[in-house]
Structures are given as structure tokens and as C-alpha cells.
Length: 376
Image (cartoon, rainbow, N blue to C red; front, side, top):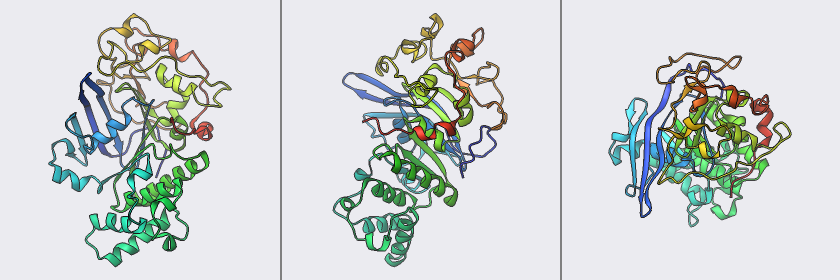
């Protein structure tokens, strides 16, 4: 169940350390994910958030090696229940992919075969992971369709995908993902193509299913309104780098990286203002030195464009996160696992330069209704 805690007191299910995913192209090596680390605890919802092109989808698909290699190359440690997925053979990984880890993608139409009925596809999904008869698989498939809210599931069982609306197709795809009773559900922009009302229904469904199936969720989104609705923790990505990581309450109450604050400024209804982020993402084949966001940042100083991306500093006291101990916070106080990659929070920096630029007192629940449509 989504507990919306700021502290970290649960057992990690997935741990990603120093993940690099590159693509060799005619124009050079695209560094889509460039040293990203994060974790997902048992029973937790973690959101990867950022603009299109920030590396969210590539990071999520690298976990189960959905990235085609070549041209892709994946380096780093990906630990799931103590097993390093990066070292598994394709056969071993197939048992994990779609089993313990299931994916729900942005476009449900692309995940469904138009020439087979929805019922047939669900039966195949069930039998792929469980050695059961067709009759037992059919019963399980009907249960899943009913559970994800397909009205009159028995009557719709023999319908084809084109006979379902976009929202109903997404529910079918979620049912297929649940066929294996996954421990981790990776949902990539599952509501982007849906209208606001249907988005809210799908998000509520995911929260209900998380509690019922006792699973963790890694949700990829560009929409901080969605984050406010469901997240426990948030990882903000930009140009393949982690800019900020925090519990959801702390992220909305005290966003600390200029990029995070810029994203929040794009939310309608926040402080009566809505802004756009000027400029564009840096060239992924030739990223600039220093902070990847420096060219678009209103608070950039000389130190921001020197060396490498700043380390993740503990927001509470400015320590480098690599040497900061893990401690536990709560939703009632500052998140001690709130970390930001910004020189203004490092030694000799002045966080007030960033924090004084706007009023950010609205909490996540106040923004839940701001969930916008896709970025098409």
C-alpha cells in the first residue's frame, strides 16, 4: 500500500547503482542514462520524473534489459531481491521479466495484438507463468478483467482490442501484467494518452492493486500532478542524471534543485502562476561540463559549469550523500534522505539562493488535481 512516507525504513526490493545506458549512433555515443542510482523498497511507489528525453524510460527498460543491444550498451549493478540482473543469462532474465517484474507501457494499443481476442491474450499471459489448464487460465483471466474494472467481463472476454476504449485497453494491459503476480510493476506513463477523468481512475486502480497484490511500483512520468497523487518517493532526472531525490511531501514542500522548482512552476494552480522552462536539453552525445541543467538555470555560477555533475548533497546539512549516513525521517518533519545535485547545497554554497526564488508551500495533495494530459 502507498504509505506516502518520507523516511526509509523498508526493505529494498530493487537497487540500481551507477547505471549507464549508451547508444552508438552515426552522430556519436548517446549517453541516455549516465550514472543513475536509485532503489525501490517493498510496498513502495517510486516515481522517476522529468521532461521527455531525461532518461526515465531508458532507465526503466534497462532494468530488465528491454534495450536492444546493440546499438544499446548497459553498464551498472541492478539488484533485484539480491540477484544482480545485469549478470543473468537471457533465459534466466526471461523468468524474471514478465514474472517477478512486469511492465505496463504508455501505449496500450501497442501491447495488444489486434488479431486476437482480449480473452485469448489474457489466457496466454496466465499460462506463460503458471502451468495450469486452459479452463483454470480462463477463470483467472476473467477474475483479472473483473478486478481491473472491465464491466461485464464475461461478455467482453471475446471482444477484440479495437472494441475497447483507450482507458479500457489500459485496464486490460494492467490485467495482463498482473497475471504473473509481480513483485514489482514498472509503469511507463500509463495515463499519458488518457483524458483527465480516466487518468484519475487508472491511478486509483494502481494504488488499490498495489495494496491487494502487495507489490512495489516504479512509475515513470513527466507529470508532477501524477507524482503528487501516488508517490512515496521521487527521483528527478534530467539529461541522464539524478538532480534530486526525496520523499513526496518534502519534494513538494521544499523542492531544492532549480530544475525541480522549474518543473513545479509548470503545474497549473501552484501559487496562481504557471511557467515554462526556457531552453532545451543538452546534446546527449556531447554533454556540457558541470551541472547538466546549468545552461537553463537562473542560479548558475561559475562552479556550475566546471568539472562533473555535482554529487548528491544531503539537503538537511549539506553533506555529500556518499558519506552521509542513512537515517529515518517521517512525514511530519524534514526528509533526511532528501538529496540534491547542486553546488549551492555543497561546501561553501548558499541554499537560500535557490530556495528564496518562489513560494513552495503547497503540499502534494493540493496539486493532485493538476495532473495534465500527455506531452504529445
